[in-house]
Length: 230
Length: 121
Image (cartoon, rainbow over all chains, first blue to last red; front, side, top):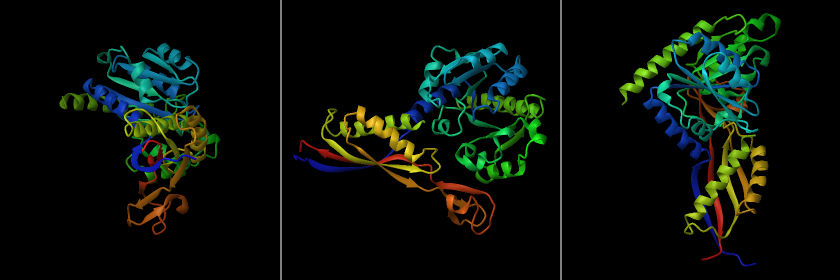
């Protein structure tokens, strides 16, 4: 067999570099507009969409929100958000298990970002895949829920490690399950000491005031910080 | 299954690296390449291998064998500074027990080596 010269190329190239580059450009664009951008992550059924409905309803007239809805197949979630009064753009991934920065860039094409104070990106419900893809967000927020069990932070530490806020949702179900709240929070605390811990229920409204306060506070802070860097 | 997107990115990196060494026109063979995958990267090595086997068949180097170097998650105890492997220690510092730690290794997801057989040299 005719063999050529063997050359060994030693490299150190990040596999996600291209996504990261596009995300950095998005982050720049968001900062220039003073836009606070949340990447909302959770497994399927933790209650992200309901939380968002409650959030945009409560913030109506206070913050102008744009919601980007990632979904594998349907536009149900964007319809729900639009019904609750905020602008929503659906990103149908056609089976892809996560959003990437290119999808966000395309979804925002032609969108006048000046018209908004905050963007919430509801990622595809998945505890693993979305974690590898930076979307140019300001912060990551993870929603976990009581029915999922307390072992999620121990099983998926990489998801919780990078979050600024963790919401333990469906907290009203706590009396009906053997969920070990202390084990849940202590597993998160071990990989992420500074995380803001919130316990919420979108059914009873419990804890939502704390979440809304954090959201408004951070958005206002970011607007000022964005202006100062100009 | 985000491993399929990642396999496509690996394919792109291989083509770029070889392309720029032969003026943009790909040539030769790639017997193997090495990718480092940290256990905290959220990437399942077996799924990545499978995704690579699907991806490489469509590309210019269908023979390219993917070697995965698994990097265990290494943590540093915030209290006593002892380094330990997360998987072996059940998430606890072997000296202090349950206490805060930071992860110093194990998030890697990078192309480390490409073996290229240049047939025009």
